[in-house]
Length: 239
Image (cartoon, rainbow, N blue to C red; front, top):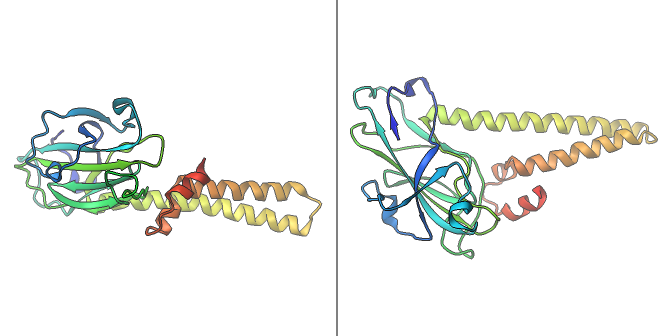
């Protein structure tokens, strides 16, 4: 991926979607290093589930992307750069130029060792040298769901820019949940005052059910309790 003239200093965000290098059911710490030769690896489309390429959902693999900057246009005054990833199915460790910058759960090679987590995250990344490639490597492990892979593309910007993505997403989720909760409580109080009005009770119950499902699908439970292993419980609530 070659980036030319992208105005990062304005906190613009670039989506790292497209063709990534991919290695299935193989693990080596060298895969995270920027000078590793991945020319023999297959490619995979990001975002996508890896099932179509691997034939199954459970397993582990490595993704790699090399980013080239235009050294003539890259501006040294850019603030700290950062990366954002909504999540991967269903645990990952993300490296930038060989340095681990963020992770979800524990990405290992067996179901017993792997801990799944779907938590949106943003992190600063090491200082960029525009004369050299920026290499992003992600190890993903998935053993607890039907489909796995890098189903959302990472986003690159200034660290302030990727933090705004994370804050905006959380704010939108909390606003919707707050409205649902207030509507549910309001109609529950109406039903308490007039218990013959069953419609208010049913509507309050409906709001509560939608509230619980959105807490599951929006991964807010993992946001509130990031240290808890609630992946399976959340999927039971979702499905």
